Structures are given as structure tokens and as C-alpha cells.
Length: 274
Image (tube, rainbow, N blue to C red):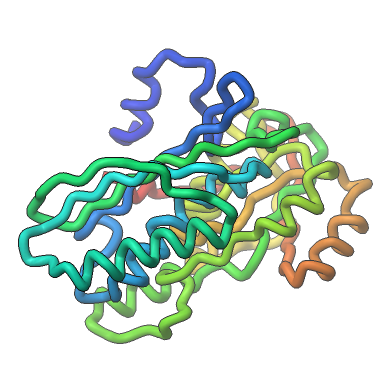
């Protein structure tokens, strides 16, 4: 068991297990974006850092078909950061939140050795999309085209440059697709740890497995931080979801069918946390 799973399993709360916690009608989520863990400052402008930090947090709300309302932002600021850089960072955080009708209402600032960002999002939803409603016979599908985030990261680690609109710099959240598709979906989550790991995580909830329709390459399946959607739905809804995908310009790939335990395969997956 990796240390993240160990830590989560030590917590005793019925609200843990989804992209966000639903408590008394509100939806709470938080993610960290830390220098030299998730990014290097020499790779990205302050605008790009702020935008990605906010997007990966908003992704949890999108994944649950929730509307983000408020954000709390904690910043650890290194000594060498300038006031111009702080202005750019804050402008990016505020603009990105505003794009999703979300307001930054506070947070905290501390001095540190590196630039670290932690954001809490408070959202609302009339019908949250949970992970725990996967049904035997459901089709498994993912949105978008996977692999670009990993490709971009590997290029940066080699000292190469990548396109400013690369998926590694700027995830493309599928908010409109999820909003229109919600009533046809049984379960879903965003793809942050890679398709292989997140599919395993989704099916493990009910100890289910799957029948694969086609082989998926490691370049596609192991690309983390994609922030596309992994969803399940009954086969009878496939044609309707294809229509929604086309209408919202969202590629939708069906790759497996959910089966009872021991009737199929799960992915080999290396967790990239810690």
C-alpha cells in the first residue's frame, strides 16, 4: 500500500472516497500544487502556475457535476518572489476562478522556501456524481485524448520546451459535457492519477472488474494529471451520450465493460504519489 492510501485508510469518515466530500448540502474539495513536486518554476510563468493550480481544484467540482461557489487559497511564498510575480499569480488565480463563477473569499499566506499553493473549493450540486454507483454491465469510458500531459512532463524533464497550451500546463475540464450527460451517468471521477490507476480505484469500491474491448498503451493509460473524466453508464444510454459528446466537442472513448469480480482484468498501475 502506498503512503497516500495508507493515510486515507487511517481516517474514519463516511464522507471520504469521492472527488469531493458532500456534507449538509455543500461540497468540499482541496488539492495542493507544490513546487518541485507538481511543477518547477523555471517551467512555467506565474500566470500558468496560478491557472493550473486553480483548474486542478475546480476539476473536483466538475467531476461531481457541482457548481464551484467559493475558494480559499493558501500560499507559501519564497523569499525570491517579486511583487510583480505575486500580482501575476493572484490575477491568474482570480481570473480562472471567475471563469467558473467562483469567488476567492480568503485563505492564508506564509513565508517558505518554495512556492506552494493549496486551495479549498466549496461547491453546490442538486445531483452529485459519485464514484460508488458503478453497475455490473456498465460501459467504462473516458473523455478527451489522453497522453499529452505525460508527454509534456517527460519533455520538460529532458530540458525541452512544450507548447504554451499543452495539457500539462492547462487541463481542459469537461464541465459542459458532464452537465448535459449527468442524468445518463451512473458513476464518474476525474483522471488525475492516470487512466490505469483511476479505473482500478473506481472498480475497487464494489470489488468489480472489467472486460477490455481493446488494449490501451502505457502512454495513454499512465498519463497522470489529465483531468479528463472517467465515467460509467448503462449501454442503453450510449447513443445519447455520443450525441452529447458531439454537441460539446468532447471525444468519448468506450474501452471496457464492468463485470463481477474475477470475470475480467484490472490494470497494472504504479502510483506516482510520494
